[in-house]
Image (cartoon, rainbow, N blue to C red):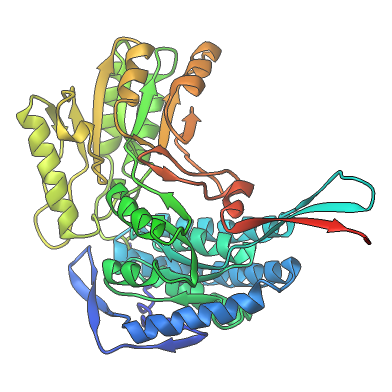
Length: 481
């Protein structure tokens, strides 16, 4: 059953409070059927200069706006997005192929980011340091300035929301470059803020080739922070670009999340919830549970339950209400996934299900499960970022932790256990910025989110998330001389 479809939004640049077009365009494609659904305007240098000027002007107003008033505007915009949830969700499903039920949840999650940060922005407290008679030492947190933000394609609404919410709640202005494949979420966000009365220039949207925009914006003196979510390779490149100007960065980069299943849990329950979570958003999630290290005693039951859940999943058009998994985002993902699966099986891995692109239109890759994958297979070190799971038996918690930490990434990690001793070891020994035990939820608006090792720098979410958008000013005030 399909829901009634809203029209895909017209995509334009949003600069200085005005919607503007450009001469050059890129195609926006629905990955479910490979048909064009829209055109993406490619920003030029003159328009980027206009965005920089607008952001400077917007910052001058917004940074001096009372936190309570900033919060009111953000909450009004969030209320409008909740009211427009179905329209936004259908836009996401059209451009990404995400099942409509998941798209609706993404809209709500994006609104929760705005609502949490709107409240937390009223609590960016400074402090008074005890001092000598007639002296006052004050510590203030002030907005850092204009932020260049870059959001990925896998969450078209909630990822831009996370970037925009932290910046605006802290009093900063933003130039956001959303992913060229999935621009609609950010368009709906900008419309809501425009309707909520956000001053012109505080939020600006630009689209186009990522390298062209980043190489032009990041070295500019007007940019005081770079916030990026994406691959580790691109994050390193942008960090080097920012370092030339001593511009701080906030980097949420790639992961390759392990799941340790200890021998004291219900294997069937853990297997079922793991399969559902793995295939969410077709596995295109930086925190997607991928490398499952299951105690050998529980492995048969876990694998059976995992496979039974996979076999019940309906793969299809994201706008269908009964779809469980949609396509991957583009043809490049298909090619990358096929290469990883082929490499693993050539090295001796067992292919339990899937492993191929589905015939017909659309970028559909079958839900795929690999078992007993050797350590030298590429997929053990390279995040598949797609609907491919690795199930490997391990003899002990020691071995599970060793294998979990064997990659250069440390974004999210998971475990199933009811043992306090196991939990203590996992907390102390797992190398991850986010560790979840007996749940596969990696982050909430109120909790800090970010990685260690090659998975990034800094935190989004929670009160820690807003701190990156501020600078600390120490004030020493002698009263009289």
